[in-house]
Amino acid sequence: MMSQWKDIDLIANEVNSGKTTALSLVEKSLATIEDKSDYDAIISVIKDRAIERAKSIDARIVKGEKVGRLAGVPFIAKDNMLTFGSATTAASNILKGFVAPYQATVIERLEAEGAICVAKANLDAFAHGSSTENSDFMVTKNPHNKKLVPGGSSGGSAAAVILDMAPFALGTDTGGSIRLPASFCGAVGFKPTYGLVSRNGVIAMASSTDVIGPITKNVRDTAIVMEVIAGQDTLDSTTIKLDSYDFIPDKYSLKGKTIGVVKEFEGSDISKPVQTKFGQTIETLKSLGANVIEVSFPLIEYSLACYYIIAPAEISSNLSRYDGTRYGFSDSKATTLEESYNKTRSLGFGREAKRRIMLGTYVLSSGYYDAYYNQAQKLRTKLIEEYNQAFKKCDFIITPTAPDVAFAIGENVDDSMKMYLTDVLTVGASLVGIPAISIPANVGNSLPIGIQIMADQKHDADLINFANALEGSI
Amino acid sequence: MTKLTKDDIFKLAKLSNILVTESDVKSLVGEIEVILNYVSQLQALNLANTEPTYQVTGLSNVMRPDEEIDYRISTEDLMKNVPDVENNYIKVKRVL
Image (cartoon, rainbow over all chains, first blue to last red; front, side, top):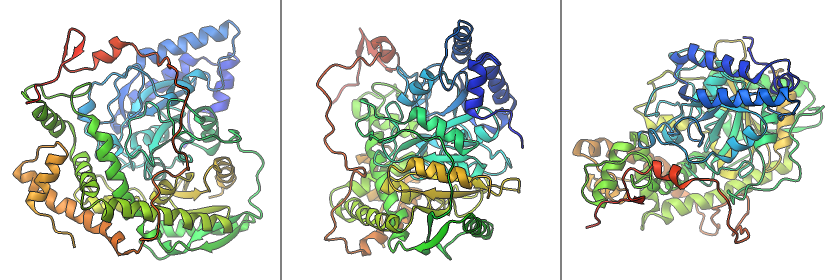
């Protein structure tokens, strides 16, 4: 399928040189969003502000100004990022109608380079989920087959990119929420090193693993977006400093690179088509001169359990701020403060959010804290050691992104454990804070399959180079 | 095997400031139990001599100069989101 969007840097060049206008790009984007609204990828459209911004960019270019490296490029943000021009809801009833009083740092950085946010994408409410079915508003459909889920939680963002609504979208990834929908929809999804991108103005889920990253059609576009959004921010004290923020892929040879395949994932519950595609990818890597070795992670089978202790714990803490007092939905019939909290949260949160809050409360409560929460954080130390050992032997680790292709809408909604197992291959990188990218394989066949590549912390540029070199060969 | 009772769920709901009905509790017992039993597998691991990791990039106590940052947020915009306002104050329900 040919995209109506050129590569991001080409679009910006055409706008900067006056060959095309920001307004025509925004109009094209808005028309596609309207045209494909039946996929329910978009919660709200930022029409007036986007058109206004486009006109002002065009006016500046007429005056001979250079606008920036993303001049006039439309993009779509996941609706857990604070933006001007429409509501920010996190796809939760408790934030329905919330109008952000400021914009997230990522949005500000993109706008400073001339990019234009045109819409807010659907997600599992508060990013809790792997299918976008947990949205309190609607279920996004997979662009390849409307009966299937797009993956989650950034399902609206990934679907929007493949539906060609904009050249790129932003997602957030806490345990796989960028990579999984990228895999199910056939997009490139990048989860950077923890702390590489400021989270100021992004609605928190699990703060020790939450990251923001791009979802794009190709790896080069991911690199361009990363160069704009990465960097330290005084408003997010968890941001880290890199020696270089140069992510644009250069000439890169796979020859001599050592790639680790996780021994413990062999024979695990991975579907036949995914296994076959993964096997072919390994052969491709070998034929391109890479050295493929087996690496062992004896404790990796515990990653998912570790994640589903730490994530709910942090969720229960982060979601305690929704009390109906300062913003968001509030139950006006309550007479006491306690009653107001209880009613607001009971009516405002969806089922999955409540489940996770209660689970998190359990693992943090006195008497269970050591057995669950602290035990999981200790295991995290061990997992970090295992990844460190692995990266002494190899440059990159490769796995499928998900155990299977996209599943049917409704298939897993009554079985949360089965839904959680979708994340089994992605949570590891989140727990240890390393960068991971999902690139599409099986392109042109019935359903996309994602291949996940991971690198050591702060090796984001190497990872992007590697993925760029492999992309197109699988 | 972790076994949860209805009372456990009511207690959790209370600690979480969430109201649950009898019928919610019925399904929540099973749903939360299944996840707890899955994550309980970590208890079989001997990690007595391992230090926990709460922060993965090694940052701690990140300080900035104690100077005002202009966050460019107007009080008016902030107050627009407040459900109940009186004389530009946030109104809360009575505590007792």
